[in-house]
Length: 121
Image (cartoon, rainbow, N blue to C red; front, top):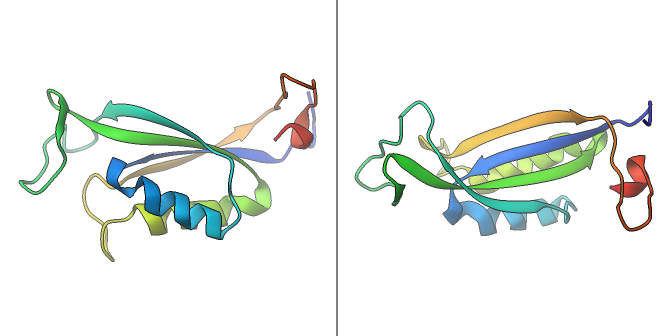
């Protein structure tokens, strides 16, 4: 394991209709590598949305998009700021805009070459 591996995994859950604006904001801060997954869930509102809100996906669950982005320490704040900029509804945001989690990464291994640590990111 690489002891000086100072990389974070940013996991963001966003509204599907904000995906393109988040990708655009990320590219402005030179973050180009990400994994995108469809997911579903609910938060404090237990899947209830206002009349203008999201589509039903599976009962009380709401469709969301999960982004996973591994970044070096200096890219953590710009990445978070870009996700907030692209993922927030309006200037103040709305219920259901999503969440961002920042998790430390112990190591990374590129399967093709066997590279580890920052070289594998």
